[in-house]
Image (cartoon, rainbow, N blue to C red; front, top):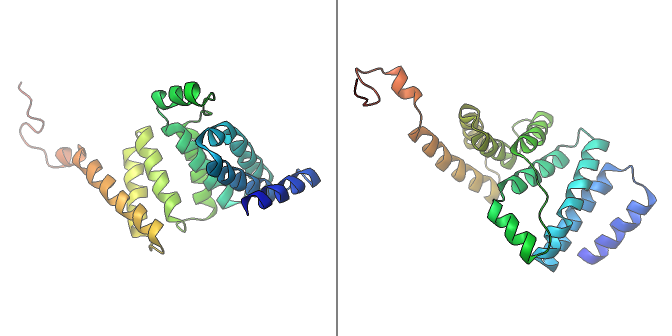
Amino acid sequence: MIQEASEIIDIALSQTDSSADVHKWAAIIIDEHCGMVSLEHRVKHSALVRDHLEKACQLNPRDFSAHYMLGKWCYDMSQLSWFQRMVAKYLLASEPPRSTYQQAYLHLSKAEELSPRTFVPNVYLLGRVCIETGYFYKAKYYLNMTLNLPARDKCDRCCAEQARNLIKKLDRYDVSKLVLFYEENPFGLND
């Protein structure tokens, strides 16, 4: 079925290059097809997936799902460690493309702006990106919003559970509580 969908997408792309939906579905189908073939194939074609998602966002800047998928792609690429990149480069003969958390935040926040508080995984990912960039106050805001949105399926419940765990970790390192309730020596420092 994926092979047939790939052929249909190839035909659609040859007919028109100005359809946001064709580019969005091309990215989805290429990623799924490559994931079924091999990890090497997926790594080698990940830049193509990004290019199709960028084109979809460019052609239809009001498409919530295209911005979410591109934001998630940026987040996933930003998560790769130096070691993982080197392993891919030498074992798979292809280094994965690079991205930043700022790019992920840009697309995820655009998706949230287009469809506010409706897609739990997007809100959760915004919280994760804020943690990675050091904006802990914003991270707590998005993670708490994740908990307050209705969980419609297993994915939403999983995001809520992970958000709850992250909030506990953030609370453990919250210095503002010490500042609000000042003691003689709140940090245990010697004069």
